[in-house]
Image 1 (spheres, one colour):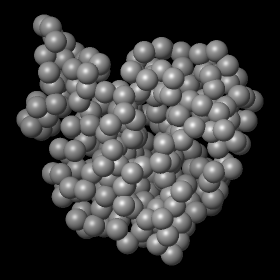
Image 2: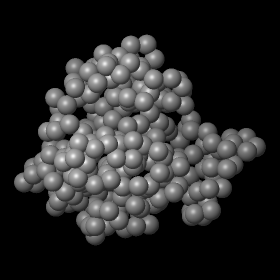
Image 3: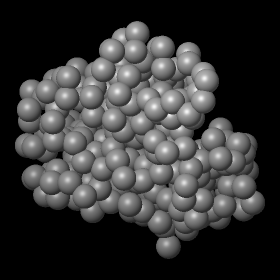
Image 4: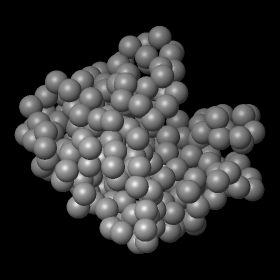
Length: 249
């Protein structure tokens, strides 16, 4: 059975994040690896994706992720059968499944209270610092006060160690980001991605933010973690409109 976490938030949309359970992959990729570019056997990953599709209204719109800020039109990509190079996606048609892959980076799911648009962003430190959340909000074209966000499983603030260059990059864009760093030794800091995401969303007027309680690094039974393991699989976060304002699975 496929392992999945369903967001605990009031959005009337379909959404889930897979765990590493319920797939066909073996070894370092065991078992529900969904990343075709992770080094796993391609046929096995495609079988894992086939199993995942049994939970969804349509095959996901997969992205070629590059730790950037480009936002794809998932409806157009779905119609064209395309795999756009982007790190975020937005959809307005029911049944279009927006998806991002992650194995320590933070997936951020977004929906408006009227269930008219959904968005998703792949927010590792580079994309988060560069503005992928802001780009996704802009692409959704909804008043920020009508939006809700859910922060999916990512490497947690007790273990995510980074160097001075990462801290300087964030503070260079927003001095308030300094609160998300805790010194551990000279030139090394623990970074709270969840805190930075909440800061960025609040600065744009999105104050209803949920999630942020998982650590991929610290839970090897459920989550892949690139920082922990190096060779590893990828989880997928997905969101879609169900139509008619019905809350999705």
